[in-house]
Image 1 (spheres, rainbow, N blue to C red):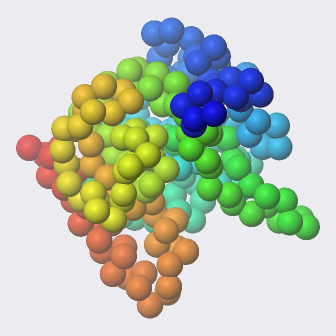
Image 2 (cartoon, rainbow, N blue to C red; image 1 turned 90 degrees about the horizontal axis):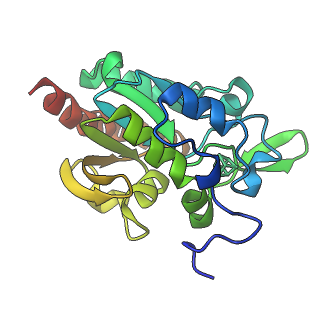
Image 3 (cartoon, helix red, strand yellow; image 1 turned 135 degrees about the vertical axis):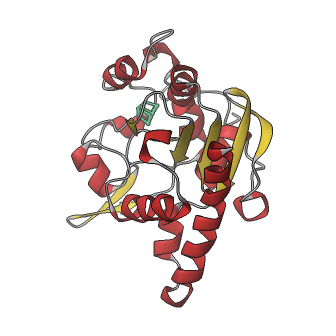
Length: 217
Ligand code: SF4
């Protein structure tokens, strides 16, 4: 079975996505999604935050532990780092809508801790109808892919963040032909070696400055 063929126990989100819905309706409908198995151990679905009329949609990987508990994306350490990078790059909050490629937290329980697990391609495919519907509802100028999961979901499995980051280009995406800016996920900076964090953060800011210049132009 290929990753684009839904398994019977993982039918994909499409049947739960209301047609022509706005962001509020999508958030409400996503609470009932059973498109893959990730809903069951998670606390709740985590869809999006920010301006539903934003010019840039930023796509991350999946909610983390803090986001799963609060029901809001990018409120944990990686989210705070992202906000700092956006501020330094000069991207206004009103220009940004943030979401994730996968809307439920995938983790492995270990004692009383929940260890993040990267979603599989099949989870990205199952959850993709939500992202497609969000992009259709927000109609942004630019999609920003934060890291490999977002890039693979939007652009296909051959996406490589290290090769493609920082380039704002019109590309074929799952949500039609769009301007796309790939960069790293802020959590990769937090997971990386401490002595490289400053440089990695500066590189993220430089990528996001490409977005700021586009939005200002
Ligand atoms: S991860 Fe996505 S497809 Fe899977 S249950 Fe959650 S919202 Fe539905």
